Image (cartoon, rainbow, N blue to C red; front, side, top):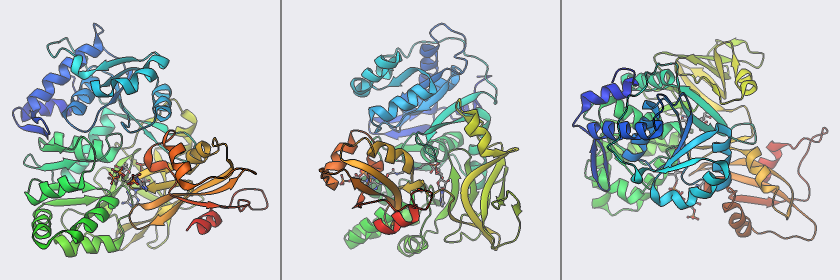
Amino acid sequence: MSGSPLLMQRALDHGTRVAFTEANGHVTYAQLLERSEAIAATLLSGASDLDEQRIAFATPAGSDYAAIQWGIWRAGGIAVPLNIHATTGELQHCTSAAGVTILVTLSELREQLAPLCEAQGINLICLDQLSLEQRCTLPELDLSRRAMIIFTSGTTSKPKGVVTTHGNIQAQVTTLIDSWQWRREDVIPLFLPMHHVHGIINVMTCALWAGATVDAYDDGFDLPRVCQRVSEHAYTVFMAVPTIYVKLIQALEQMDPAEKAATCAGFAAMRLMVSGSAALPVTIHQQWHQLTGQVLLERYGMTEIGMALSNPYDGERRPGCVGMPLPGVAVELHDEEGQVVTAEGEPGQIWVQGRNVFLEYWQNPKATEESFTRQWFHTGDVAVLEDGYYRIMGRQSVDIIKSGGYKLSALEIENVLLDHPAIAECAVVGAEDPTWGELVAAALVIRHGHTLTREALADWASEKMSAYKIPRKLVFVEDLPRNAMGKVIKAEVAALVS
Ligand code: MLC
Ligand code: AMP
């Protein structure tokens, strides 16, 4: 195992422990290692090293996902996880921007992915058709090798590929292992999407690093099943986005008293419950505490940096705050001139430095350079320090929306909407919402002689973008509000749609 990432070397020690429980049974660490070795040998197909070739994979959460990811890493490739619910257009962007050469998937997704692979000359491999007997000598890897590209939306119209090295991933994982006291006995449910760091790093990779067990949901968040498993006291750790806590509170309030008591008792018995990816409203923090006795640990992170700020495992977990820098992560606040803000109570943009910080945006040196000052990464989020705890105040750009924990680009959605024959102009903003954090909202100027309904637009848009990007609130306007320079005033659009 020399030369493999430490995660896999550790898996040798976890051997017969259960790595995943899933619908068809369970998979041990030893089986995961064996399967990933066969996948690595298949991907290498006689070569000695993939030398950072980009290998995409599209599989639901579970042991197949982990075996493919580890197989790509062990063969020396860069893993590019795809959103299994993305439209063909969205997938096309990721595979072509990353220069993907091979896509690994399950046979049930073959038909859906074959045309894309044919069009781009990508070799499509179905996991279930592989021989698990294959073996070969695997390459030596060091921590500076690129390991993963995750696509993230930002202030540009198309998502950018965030490149992390094995060293970055190791730093992102180990700081959470220590700070949140991960242990081998832990069992965690995994129902988050597997193309973002919350599911990939915080839940799956931390659990596998610790030798713990992941209970995988292959079709995303399934509220009745989660509550059932919680009431059976199946889990010790739980991690979710605020929207999930809102949905759980709504569900608990509708349960009959016996079911509610059993489910609340299951939540109460866990050693750790974490919220992140979007702001957790103080009211939800308090309601959750009243219902379950749990004090949620809120933390702050980003695709580019993993986790940066966290409330303490032991000590005060302050509602509305994201705590302090994790070990090994340096955080500073900077004003608009780039000067460090040291006074408590004064807002500034969060800058982050550390081994956790990503290497680069894939083949985009300009965007990479613009995001850093020396080694400090500019997050675009504004925070304030209050009594030693950071509190997130919002984002610098109005063009970034967070809905259900997904980061969305208003510009990307506007570009899609402008393809609709009835839409002459549009402006997309996030509208505050108690369940989703923000809802995607749009002000539309309709072309003369055309009509458009919300339902017709939703039908049309579902072919072009993932479900969470489709505007849920629409207002029809004669003209978009603009300033003297002709720039759309998004604050006025937000007032129109709210
Ligand atoms: C779905 N729906 C939405 C919506 N998404 N409506 C409004 N806004 C949205 N954003 C609608 C669907 O169209 C459908 O409508 C209904 O809600 C149910 O859809 P669903 O997909 O079944 O929803 P559900 O499974 O309940 O999904 C909610 C969710 C999911 C919260 C579980 O959005 C999710 O998994 N979010 C997590 C995202 C995440 O992991 N982000 C982390 C990024 S990393 P209808 O009409 O058909 O019923 C990061 C860094 C960090 O941020 O710090 O962690
Ligand atoms: P992503 O780019 O999808 O990784 O999302 C990262 C963004 O999510 C951050 O830049 C923040 O805007 C937001 N975020 C993550 N955690 C929190 C939190 N606890 N509170 C507020 N915003 C958060």
